[in-house]
Image (cartoon, rainbow, N blue to C red; front, side, top):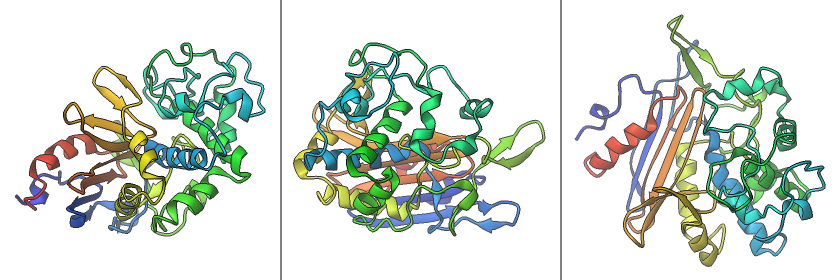
Length: 333
């Protein structure tokens, strides 16, 4: 099966397929800079939106293993913030697996457009995780802590703040030293949109009315937070999976907990910072994903087969549909 017959002709981004620990297909499509017709390459750094939550989770689990934090440590005991009506007894475990009930600054169950956030609070103000606090601090709890699973962006902003409190450095600096560099993810980081390093793709939104693309620079945080906003390459993602699965980032015991269902809702399963697709009663395929205006990302990995698919688009293409199609044909490249 020819891969290009599966991938839409207007796909913009990169596709990487690994089988038995080896890359069997990797190719870029479309443009990183549409105005100047600069093509995407396999070494292009793409925005990955909420995919960054898995890196924050790894950072937290590392600190738990070092006894600098604990699963049952609470909001109120770690962060010296006036939490107002937010339950200060929310635990790190609840934040990790989206059962905290903390008010979500971007509640995906009721909000459709991330850009709506910046109508009254300019996105260029978001340079640190703490800059998100005004967007949720005056809201009530969504539900009592621990009551149920509901995907929550604020929870991971707070986890980023906890990393900063425990280590004394910005969360992205910690992740660079303790997650990215050990994994040889040297093209991965949290960059400001007005100060992007080389080889970063612009992300584009299609204007249906004008029939043209425009940049997402006014639609997302100017710099990512604990909730998301990391830039990475498909090869860096492959390197991360390898390093994680070999127990080089967290211990094998902690990895087992991370990749086990910690919360669920219907047929959705979540570990610590990672989604889990149920294969049978005992096996789950871990994956992480992200979506922002102009951005879509999905990466899954089967530990038993040492195989995975990573898809990223800088025009918000449907990587979930493409993932379903490719899973049927992986191995016939």
